[in-house]
Length: 444
Ligand SMILES: Nc1nc2c(ncn2[C@@H]2O[C@H](COP(=O)(O)OP(=O)(O)OP(=O)(O)O)[C@@H](O)[C@H]2O)c(=O)[nH]1
Ligand SMILES: [Mg+2]
Image (cartoon, rainbow, N blue to C red; front, side, top):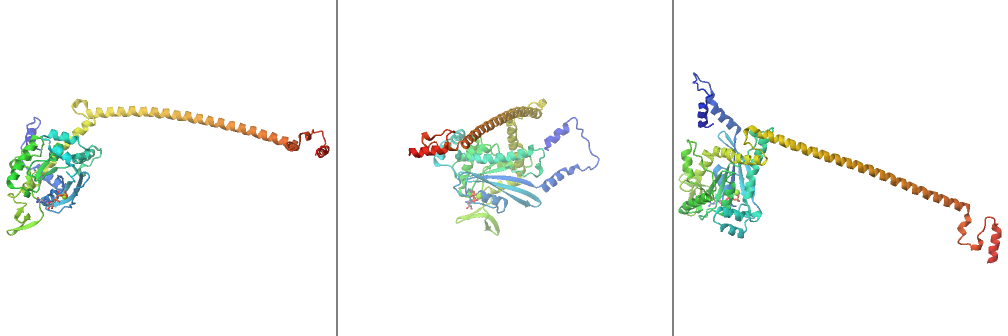
C-alpha cells in the first residue's frame, strides 16, 4: 500500500490513532511479504521485436549473462512467428521464471512496392491507412498484437474460473517489449511506427537502437533526437520509467532523457588491462559493452532489471491487462455504471431467461418433429400393409388360374393336340378314338 493511502486511512474518522506501549510484532509484515514472494519466485516475460539478425538473442544473452538456446532465423519466413522459451534462473536465493519471446521473420515479408507506398507517407494516420488497405500478409504487426492478446485472454479465463488457481498459474503476459531499431541513423521505418502505435496500449515498450557500435557518436545523438520526435509527433506512448516513487525518481527521470538506449551486445570476453570484459573487438579498437562511454547497455540493464522490473510487472497488470479485461467484459455485455442495479446479477438473470426461452422453443420444435415422425411411421406401416394385402390377392388369383388351367388339362389331355391335328379330327367326347384314327388314315 502506498504511503499516501496509509495517511488517508489514518485520517479516516473511524480510525483512532493509538500509541503502543510495547512491541507487538506487525512491523515484520514487510519481511513476511518478502519471504513469501521469495519462496514463491517471480516471473518476467520479455518480448523482443526486431528484424532478423538485428542482435536480439545476443542482447538477451548479454543482459542475463548466460547462453540461452538461440535459433538463427531465415529471411524467407512466409509470415511472422512468435517463439517463446521459458527458463528457470536463480540469483542468490531469488528464483526467476524468465520467458523470452522472439519475433521470427519480422519485416521480411514486405514487397518493395508496399514498402515504397508506406515510406511516401509522412504522418502516422496516413501510414496506418496505407498499411490497413494493403494485403493481409503485410499486416505484420497483427501477429504480435494477437500474441499479446492471447496471453491476456488466458489470464482472464483463469480469473473467471470458479475454481481458479492464480497463485500457481504460469503468467505469460508480456511485461516488457524491447523494440529493436535498426542503426540506420536516418529515421524510423513505417513498420516500426505502425507496430509501436498498435502495441503501445497493450505492452510496456522500451525502444533500443541495436548494434549501436555501427553508428558514429554524433550521428547516434541526432538519431536519438529524431526517433523521440517521431514517436511524439505520431502519438506513440513508450514506457516511461516511473518518477512518483521518490527512492528512484531521480535516476528514472535522468534515464527517461536517455531513451532510446543505444545498445551493443556481445558474449565474447576481451582482455582490457588486467580484466576480462564483454566487448566486440574490431581491427581499429574494442567496443566495451559495459562501458557507459561506449553504449547504453548498462543503463538498459539497470532500468530493466535492477530498478523497474517490479514496476513493469505492475503496469502490465494494472494498466494494460486492466484495459483488455474492461473491453472484453464490456463486449460480453457487462456494465457497472450504476452500483444499485447489481449489473452482474441482472445480466445473469437476463441470460438465464434468454436461455430458458430458447430451450422451450427448441423443446416445442422437437415435440413437433417427433409427432411428424410418428404420423409418418403410421402412414408407412399402413401403406406397407395395403401393399402386402394386394400382393397376396394377386398371388391367390394367379394360383386359382393356374389351378383351373391344370384341371382343364387333366380333364382333356388331347386338347394339347389341337394345333397338330386337322380340324376335322376334333372329336366330340362321344366319338370313339379308334374310329377317329381310322378316318385320319383314310384322309391321308
Ligand atoms: N556490430 C554488432 N553486431 C552484433 C551486435 N549484436 C549482435 N551482433 C551480431 O549480429 C549477428 C546476429 O545476431 P543475433 O543476436 O543472432 O540476432 P537475432 O536478432 O537474434 O537474429 P535472429 O534470431 O536470427 O532474427 C551476429 O553475428 C552477432 O554477433 C552488436 O551489438 N553489434
Ligand atoms: Mg535470435
